[in-house]
Amino acid sequence: MIYLLVRRLLDSGWLEAHRLGFLRVFTAVEFEATAAIVLAFAICMLLGSSVIARLRKLKIGDVPEFDQAEVNKMMESKKGTPTMGGVLIIAAIFITTILLADLSNFYVRMALVCIVLLGAVGAIDDWLKLTAAHRTGSRQGLTTREKLSFQIGLCVILSAFTYQYGHNLEAATHLYFPFFKNVSVQLSLSGYVLIGTLVMTGSSNAVNLTDGLDGLASGSMAIVGFTFLVLALIVGNRVLAPYLLIPHIEQAGQMAVLAGAMVGACLGFLWFNCNPARVFMGDTGSLALGGLIGYIAIVIRHELVLVFVGGIFVAEALSVILQVSYFKFTRIRYGEGRRIFLMSPLHHHFQRLGWTENQVVVRFWLVGFLLAAMALATIKLR
Image (tube, rainbow, N blue to C red):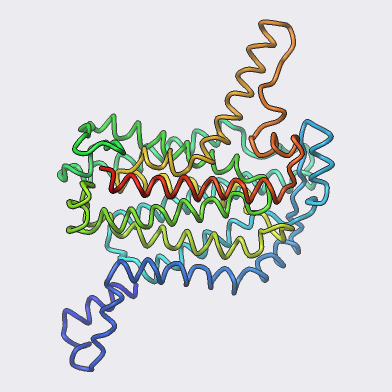
């Protein structure tokens, strides 16, 4: 909104005539992205306490239940903590984007659709689970099939629209490989949609699985979001992108504003979510954040880099897949289910090993920082 207003006033000469030319800074994506971090953080700080109070009034408290008594005992202190705090994250990102981003940009509009709709699915799931006790014979949230069906359907549509919009730009429809310069694969519509759907759906569910300890998901997402802010700025820069042998997609630079809003919102939410947490993001926030970072990745053509930068989320998701698959296999093969990890997702495995919750969270953050630094190093290695 501010971008479009300043752009119009610049084109008309009104700003220069009134000696307000300095406001042109609002049309620079670098400034917009930086301002987005600050504004989203401020929105979370201003609204956080009232949102938490409202969730408490609605009695939307978390009831963590696990299949192991030891973990249930460790998590007993979290009972009753308000969840669905993801509405605060989504609101901060949405308001910040509306104010600072170029709303005439196709990618910006699709990103907003992505986060709002995935957030709505998560909110429905959270609401059904948290209010089940008040409804006779009600179900415990959305089924896995229902959630996946909506996620896949939405991601297919978003991927198809994004491909059609950028199919005339060669850089916008290639799959690029980190560490290798001038190595890419031209994607057809079906290939683009398949990869886009896998990336967005996979990242959405991976973040959801990671959201199990105070501050783990929000802190990790802030790290990944900042990395993609830098990548989006480079992709949108007509000088830096060719120099660093990165695909240049000018309009994709606006994804830096979304990434900045994500960083600020996650940091602001972390203020209330750090141990001991006053609020949890729930599926409302985790599904939306994962889907949004996945969409940013496909727009700036860094899907494979996301797998690397988001290594924490990948490890968490893989731990669940391996645990469930191995348990089912051994139950059929040996008559009893066996486990690879003491418990999945992975963060609970380390808790069972004796790590405190803070140790798990901070050490996972440290690994996330290292992965982010290594991913940014691949820029020059090309």
